[in-house]
Image (tube, rainbow, N blue to C red):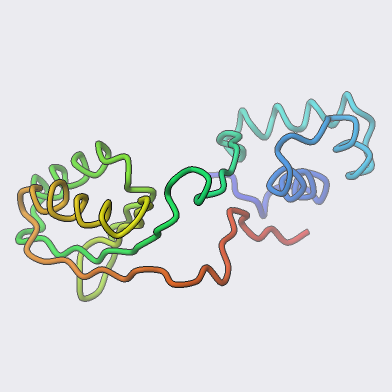
Length: 158
C-alpha cells in the first residue's frame, strides 16, 4: 500500500495546503507549491484517484449548527463476539449525533464522540437512543468544558 512517505515533496506540500484550505483555487495552489496549474491539477487528481484525498468538506461552527455540547462516551459491551460488534457498529451508523465511533483496546470497547444542542438533548440521546441498543453493559460520559485544540489536519512532514 502506498503511503505519504512514498510521495515526493511536492505531493506532500499539496496535501498540506489542501488540508488547510480545500477550496483553494488551483492557480493559487500551483503557485504555493511552485508548479504551473496544469501539472498541479494532474497531481491533485492523481492524489484523489490513489485515495490520499478522500473528500472535501465544509467545517461548521457547532454553536451555530445547534450542536454546542460535545461529549465523549466510553461504551462497554456485554459481549465482544463478531456478531455483537457488528450489531453495535451498525447501530452507531444510524445515530446522527455520533460524530466518531472508535473501537479501542483497554478498559472499555468503544469511544464515541457526540455533538448535541444541550444537556437535555444529551439526556434524550443517552436514554432514548444509546440505552436502547442491545448489548451495552455500561457507559461513562465525559462532557467537554472547553475545546483547547481541535484540528482536522493530519501532520505531513515535507
